[in-house]
Image (spheres, rainbow, N blue to C red):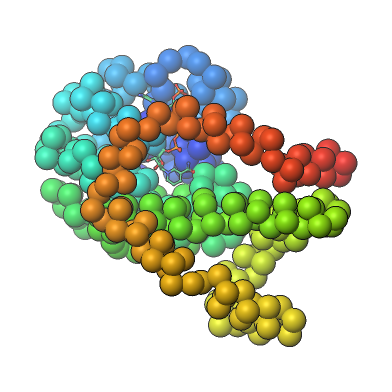
Length: 310
Ligand SMILES: NC(=O)c1ccc[n+]([C@@H]2O[C@H](COP(=O)([O-])OP(=O)(O)OC[C@H]3O[C@@H](n4cnc5c(N)ncnc54)[C@H](OP(=O)(O)O)[C@@H]3O)[C@@H](O)[C@H]2O)c1
């Protein structure tokens, strides 16, 4: 089996590397120096090499698992030295779509392979034999697709993917991923939880109870939703929850809300969101958001419950 060189050792890369290693799929990690990521990878028994070293260019299969905004610069620096026909896997289509990497680096095969999971869950679901989905696109592959698909089948299984992988396009994956982050996964869920936690505690409900209702139970109910599917989920909930669900649905999903959701997708599709990304200092934004959450009563209650129940 052809080895995969993973570039970077961040959130997604750590899960890929450990899952592949545990599945005995040949893998190594390419890093930019002997820093904390290097020590971490070594402590997990992973083979590491330095990006740009002679041995780095030996392989034909790479996964570029560094932040999306750094892909273009990375390839400017190293892209022309890869063996012609090398395959570069991307876990998200954004940089391919935004930076036109395929036409800038025609010597490489830019392939999308996107597990639909954050890194930590990719690892924990692998360990517990949970369900993990992925999508892929070979639209930029210029060589024998059959050969690549054979490799991908083994690679995908070794990574722990057991739903698909399903074929898509780079554009579709990018748009769907950005939209689900903006409209549901990374906005609606955490911020609705925080608002509701505040409403409950303002009215004198104990923070521990509010925490269970608004945060911890999320995980349990989503597990049930995904396990049984949307229709049967509504068989599982109590009559009060059913009536409340219907009331909340009609009250909250107003035309304004639906229009706002659609406008998020419009901004993604007309690429004005790409401009917002370009104009944002990510580290600065992350610090400000973390500060907001650090101060939040929901976070403080989370920490208290964690500490009390160690
Ligand atoms: N976060 C997720 O779970 C998730 C989910 C789905 C898809 N993805 C996709 O997976 C890819 C990786 O995202 P991520 O969130 O896992 O990234 P990340 O955690 O931010 O990646 C950090 C790693 O990238 C390395 N790195 C950063 N800039 C570099 C550069 N210029 N040259 C070389 N190495 C560099 C860092 O090196 P040092 O160790 O030297 O600092 C570190 O090892 C992205 O395409 C993302 O869209 C991520």
